[in-house]
Length: 250
Image (tube, rainbow, N blue to C red; front, side, top):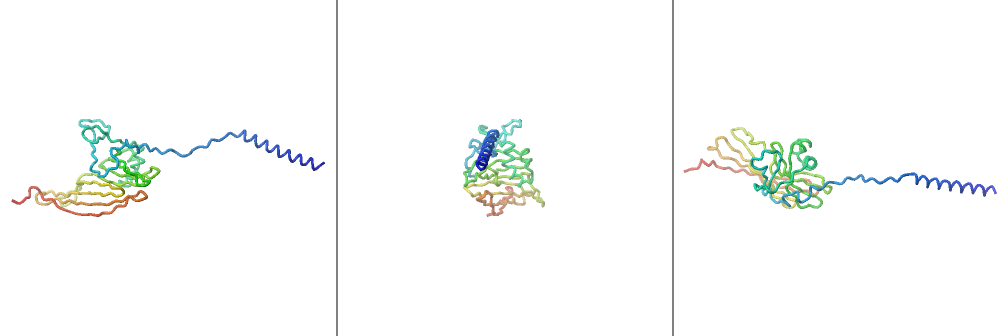
């Protein structure tokens, strides 16, 4: 008889435990699962933002800054003098995200400078290279102007940047010995992973009637690596001279 009572008590305890657990589950509110991931804004990759698709030569890019006699500060940039098509400017947040890493490394400035004191425009969206998305952006700043390729990874984050055309524009550089040097031209040709960049400097002398001008021509080959970085090597380094126009022999 005593064993039966003990067994009943044991079963009663188990039953009360089960009921108690069920009541606690009912009292405990369901906690909604929070998605902590943030959607990445990729709207800047829309084709409509780019004048060019898969640019092959930076010499094709023409930029007209503002209309004639327009003294406003709207920073509008057009594709030609017809003023019918405009380049799309980057927002401050886009400048900080896309150009600041490259500009900060190239010019030794902080990201705030790139965000607040520079302007930038979408120029070309290139063909993808695997998971990499190259884009070309025109960047303008104090004594600076370039066409820069930015490589984005599959998370749409910038990996590296390469200056295709232009760069620092401080004006003529005094070389001493009555000579000055200035940037004559620069441009790049693009083909898949390969970039060929030409940079030419001209050295002029004050006495141009007696001394030839010197042209320094430099050619660089750049390959876009699988990780999105750029590998550059110089392939040509040449010098040639231009005789003064008024120094011809009779």
